[in-house]
Amino acid sequence: MVGSTAPRVSATAILPKPALQRVLDNLCQSGFQLIGPTVRDGAVILDAIRNISELPIGWTLEQKAGSSHLLRTHSTDYFGCPVGPHSWKRYLFPPHFDLLTAHRNSHGWTFEPARDDSPPFAFIGVRSCDLHAISIQDDVFVNGAVSDPHYARRRERAFILAVNCNTAASTCFCTSMKTGPRVLSGFDLALTELPESFVIEIGSEAGSNVLAGVDWQPASAFDLGRVTQIMQRTERQIQRQVTTSDLPQLLYDRIDHPYWDAIAARCLSCANCTLVCPTCFCSTVEDHSDLTGTNTKRTRAWDSCFILDFSHVHGGNSRPTVKSRFRQWMTHKLGAWIDQFGRSGCVGCGRCIAWCPVEIDITEELSTLRSQGAR
Image (cartoon, rainbow, N blue to C red):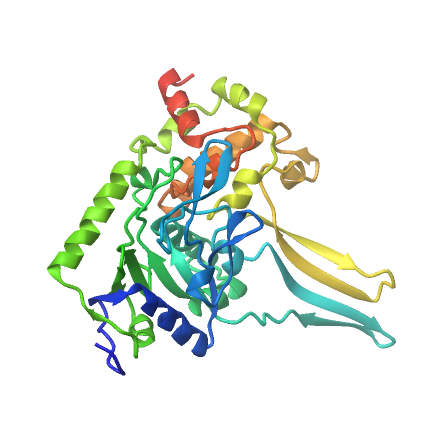
């Protein structure tokens, strides 16, 4: 079915793989900047793309604790590569963002709120765990008592083309966190990749409109059955498991457990885990002046609870040791976050495991704390 007719919302269609390029073209013509996975400098990152040839076709990531290696494969899958170190939060909640500028002249100071000139983004290839991470950040930045206008503007203009995972990394544990591998909601379009085509679910009017003029057919029961088989196969690949039924109380009961010292002896407090985490939201505000003292810029930048100065307040530091900082991060992520937002701050993506230089594995640390009992 080709032409101006587009599938209705909640319908499921099937389209040949090359037709995805027309979808990307339609998004570009609608004014979106496409952001998707691509290979740069020996890594899979999220960056601006325009063509399906820029996707990591024929590449995969071999991941384990403290290790992530880019490998060539014979696969022709467009989205067969697991998630890399980047998450979508870098486009909704940028690592550095100018808040205002100040200029001094002969009449005094003038202050100007910074302008956000970023285009609307179309996120291509969002996995289920990352969709949940975006939803968690929505709770932090827009669904609370105070809304962050900078995040809200970027979020409300974003188009999400999600992808069901057909391959799991050894570091994934999304099934334990109930965040994947299948996309269930929060998308405009959701793809499942078959060898020769995509099964596509339409999640919004915007998603339906993007398929106008695209070569598509209604998905059959056989097509939907193949999707189910792929999802079942991916779930079986996920071996890492986490028990969550006793959280957050498990961590509260072990707040003074000596095992925290054993973790701290390995932890470098480097903040890698918080930088790659798709839900961490700590930030700081910095003022920068030029050498003349006439131009000043105020910038919001990512920060981390692992950084010593982060916990420094008037009169001292509330978390002066690596032990106290790691305990704060893990207890908040898997415990206090549930009290604060009604759900865990971990989506089981496994990034913190792969990019920890000393191979600290949050799933193993939780399991060890549980096995040693409360102290």
